[in-house]
Image (cartoon, rainbow, N blue to C red; front, side):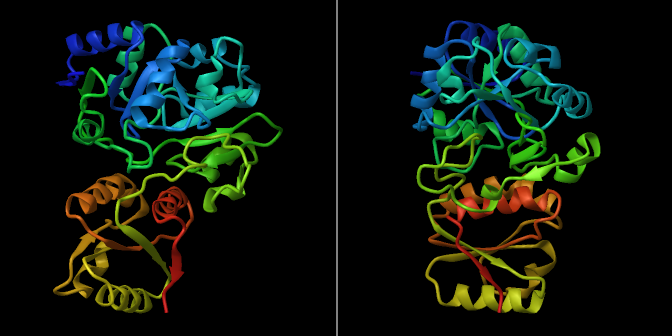
Length: 340
């Protein structure tokens, strides 16, 4: 299959809509990461997503809609869910709600619930409207790889697997949406993202965080959200996260590990770059928000450089830091150490 990589012009978005209507796949930009879209109501089209990604079918997909009202045909929308839609949609918040029979089992991975969101990206919204159907879309990478934040990343993974990739430039958020379950009495964050616990609690009064956010799922434990069950976001090299509030200890630990490793690289906060003269080092920026924008691209750069050992400085888990640490931890297979 020949893959076209085209700028997200109106005529190319219209082509994408026709491809989705005909049961084919389209790579497209959102504000979070690039998505790999199919008609969410067409079970066979959705199966093609799993084939293209090499993704296990027990991993649920997120359904993207063009406006909040479109969620009504897919799931049972509670008053709490409606408040959250009013506050955060369009935006990087996925709401997990009890699904209706219109949603195929393959889309929800056999669960009784489904995640739905309205993306805050003009190309994504135009594509959904052009297709005239809700669009199921995980990140547009092969399963386990770092998520794509530009069209080139999608092409690297999906060349000759899908017919079209729409290039809408770099993603502004850089990590996937917050996934929030509203199936119970209290909203629960299943996957952290840009929309934080505090922001959600300001709307709903309460918000919990699932304990699985910063640990691997246990044997036999089901995944109610994407990004929980299988190896995710991972570079090819071995990755270790170094945590600590004492910057001198962080620098000393990173240096020690770098010098005892072959073909290593350090990823650190911007203010510590000068602490590693003569070493291969890259900046994570000045804040968790900065890191969110560049993390997946940096991990792909590590692969391109054939780095064997990635030593990465962590962030505090407050606010967006939780989303960044969740992605880092899974990319590192939870190899996290305290600086000493």
